[in-house]
Amino acid sequence: MNLSSRGLLRLTTVLAVAAVALLPNVLQAQNTSKSDQWIHVRVENKDEGGETVRVNVPIDMAVKVLPAIRHNQLHDGKVRLDCAHFDDVDLKAMLDAIRTSKDGEYVTVQGNEDDVRVAKNAGYLYIHVTEKKHGVHSKKNGDAKESAASSPTRESKVEVKVPMKVVDALFSTGTDELDIVAALRALSSTGDTELVSVKDSENTVRVWIDSKNVTD
Image (cartoon, rainbow, N blue to C red; front, side):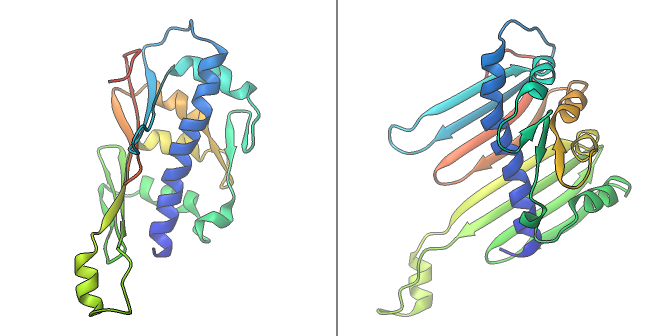
């Protein structure tokens, strides 16, 4: 995977993992709050006997409770990032350039290992990353091309659709932190939106917001 696609994939993974790991704590803290908008997380394990986890949290409750949680990289409603994980890419500068530019498709990469698409349209940032996992080639028997053809290609797909005002809020404190509370406040004024979709051979993850208090 090249540097650009690695950085994008890790960014979306951080967002998805943060939602899955932190929202259950919020849910346990209080369950009587009412809100027009709810954030939902659904994780399905595809293994035989695998579990499905569903989390539903009112956004206004999350905004109030998250600042009180201190766990690993989470503090005061912010998640601290290790900038080295992003291969020396200044994500704040990159996203600021996209935010101030006209709508368009900024990055399109089609390769043997990854397909990447980054675009902005009508106030939304779109990031699509497909990581291709090829079968192991046999060097002992037969031609490598024949072995590659007989080995299926598995794909991991990450699709992100985020309002640009939410992106602004996430990176409002600096390059080494994501302001989750500020992003949730921005989300609360947004209509029903699919935020993150992750699909691979082992799990599917979906993160979205709407006015329902249950998942699909």
